[in-house]
Length: 128
Image 1 (cartoon, rainbow, N blue to C red):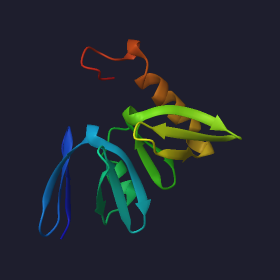
Image 2: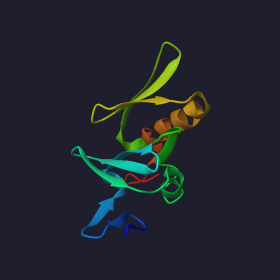
Image 3: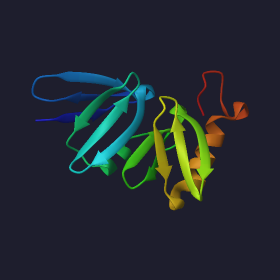
């Protein structure tokens, strides 16, 4: 049986044979492919879990993790750029992945991206 336990700076994931500690900073994105989600980590690693995207998203920091479309939540700290090409907004992640941003979430993505990249909004530890 799979277990997912959320802590302040990381979460624990375990299945029948293994247990992992995943720090939120290591998450690049979370993609949904019902009934599974794939948590993409830095270094091209991934964890596949049988959970809903909403169940995981509600346990994440909403200032850092933004649902940009129906199937994807991204860690805004790993976004390199937000750009518009032919009336479609996209995010380019630091690892080279590109995600389309839905029309409904463009303003939220822009706001979070600009807040995270504004040096005035961060404290000495880089926190918002």
